[in-house]
Length: 109
Image 1 (cartoon, one colour):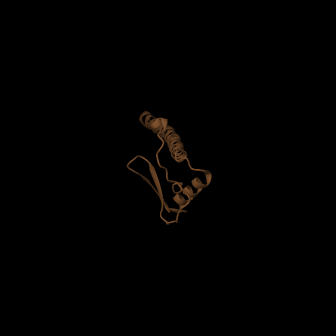
Image 2 (image 1 turned 30 degrees about the horizontal axis):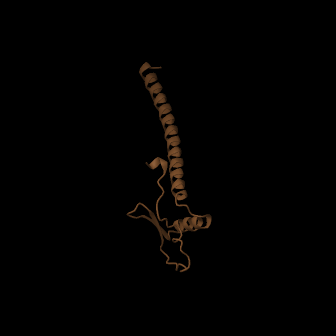
Image 3 (image 1 turned 90 degrees about the horizontal axis):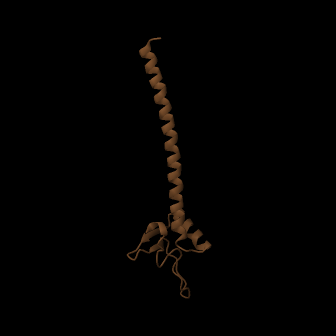
């Protein structure tokens, strides 16, 4: 076999192996990124200090697209239901998902 052709074939094989290795590395990195993003989302929702029912209502509203989350001037988070639900007058708690003050997480400092 021609030495130049053999060298080119060897180089092609080496390049294909390197590409496969880098694609596997990229796949692992994307999985790690997804896991870290998920952890940040969970920390954000946990910091809202909602009880189980309120959390389920909030998550359901987000999935249905009926809830918006906004950051106010004080650094607090306000969750608004786009379907206006009347709040009981005797209930002094903020609307479901509304947090008066946002808790600062250790890793945000």
